[in-house]
Length: 248
Image (cartoon, rainbow, N blue to C red):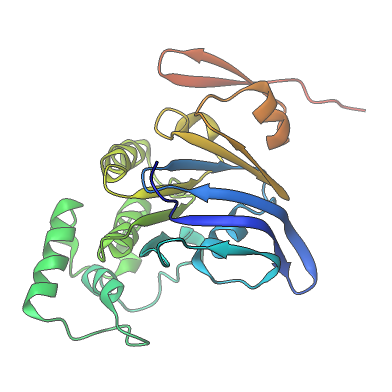
């Protein structure tokens, strides 16, 4: 079996003295495609920050058996300041930054690397466009190019289908399936029905973490997810049917 890229052992953390995650265990392997689901405020983004080393732990530890893997991160679009005067090319190039230099001087090979990344994403014609003029899908592609430019071993995406149209979402998931042949992927999403066909396993995060070694969405998972939903599967894409909510 492949050696894990990362191992979380009894990890508890939060912000200031407010706990968010408690005693989380998780192993991430090189060929994993993990869908992270859970209610708002349950700790999904906090889990990503733990993996990225952006938040101190209250207790437990994170181990990287082969050394810290090269990691690409696509944050939530809501965290991006679209008024910042920066172009698509500059955003992607910043993924090659050294130290605190956000606008590194690129050599010839690095410029070719950026060109190839933009070409792969179908963004070459928009390379000089300011990010404030991009659609939601175009901005997500730009940020994903930045996350991929250094050829990561692990890719973490936080709600990548937010503020995008259905066509972009379908293109994104096709792209991710191809990328998973070369890297591990952790995909955080609120849309459990949409991501089910492309992920391999599920991690339910709601203060704690419950790992399910398949992509099948069961009644047990939905209880952990804390959402009153039934799943009825029709072909490859599951459809969701809401139960009645209680009213006084």
